[in-house]
Length: 481
Ligand code: HEM
Image 1 (tube, helix red, strand yellow):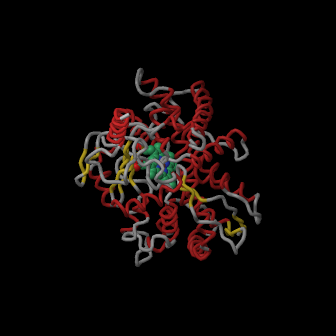
Image 2 (cartoon, protein in one colour):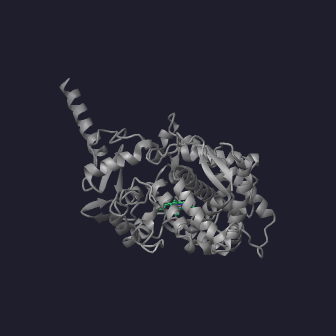
Image 3 (cartoon, rainbow, N blue to C red):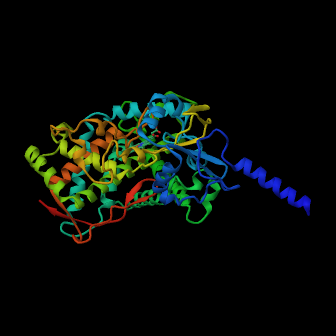
């Protein structure tokens, strides 16, 4: 009997030791044997829970998912210090269900080391050749904006959910760059693909234990089986398009990202430019390029409904400068209140509250804490976007915080707003997203007045956290001007 008791005690001590928080890591909540801190908070409550943990343990703390530690870093200065000043140290991603199981180290968004370096450089050069980072891209964006206006025209004066129309329009911009083609708003196959993407973004949460323990994805409600299915379906869709491109490939006529990649394949045999790498990168661009910008635009619609006084101000400026002529990026500087409104939407929407996790490439020490090589480190962009020292009264919607005394959109709040993250591995689509946000919002205000379905009960501003922070479904009424 005593032997059994002794064995159980030793076993518990061993489990405790090997599943507890390793020495030297930042502090954190008490760990329990085997599970660590699993169950400490619901993945959907991760934003509030991490704000609370920060109050208890400071700007940098550790949470244990079973025996796997995850460090979270808060505050503008810490994030800048680690992602900008120590840029070389934090360019990698930790191993998670996405890169470890689904992507097997390939792709761009979730890859690390030489694969990431080569494909980030390739993506940037190719996209630049195709108009990325140049104003010429705005022709393509404006075409989509106009198609969107025609599409939503059908719902004039009737309450409707604008979610799908916005997603299709934004997705078409990225599809033009990737495949050189766009899809009709009624295309059933494309419609289903976008729905799948929505479902994946809504039901998957990186704060879930299944993110670092892939076997848990089979548990009901983990959401990651949706992700796997979406990946398979998007990949099947992409494969067809790639095969079509291969059949018509002409190295003197490189029109889109897929062509650019196929050209690289002909130049570099036995390289990382494989078919699988192409399929995964395209899927990542498709997902990231659609959901993030479209979700931000949905938040913009919601804030316009909540703030008719801002609709009036922005429309005054737009009407005075453009009347009904098409907006162009050159007009952005002359419309500082529009820019300030969009920045405030991005700040409030807080769509990527923890960015995408990074991992140090070797053991690293910061502020007296160990950051072991490969550990999962989350950078809480939420702590910057909601920082009362940078953005006083952060819970209030105040676009005027981005305007200086002369009414120009400049200054510290704008410089410190980092919804696209910061440093060398920040969002690759930042320039495109900013163009889309400006052109879509400006054209919308020129064409329509946005009204709530019920002015006595405005739609909720409470976000729902999945892969991104999303608004709850809501209806809008568009009245033609
Ligand atoms: C409002 C819109 C957007 C927001 C708020 C946003 C935000 C972000 C954030 C926070 C990251 C993580 C960066 C990090 O690791 O620190 C990221 C990465 C990324 N984004 Fe975006 N994004 C947006 C639009 C786009 C668009 C339009 C594209 C497509 C062209 C895109 C493609 C990517 C890719 C490929 C990465 C991975 C970059 C890498 O790992 O090197 N994003 N984005």
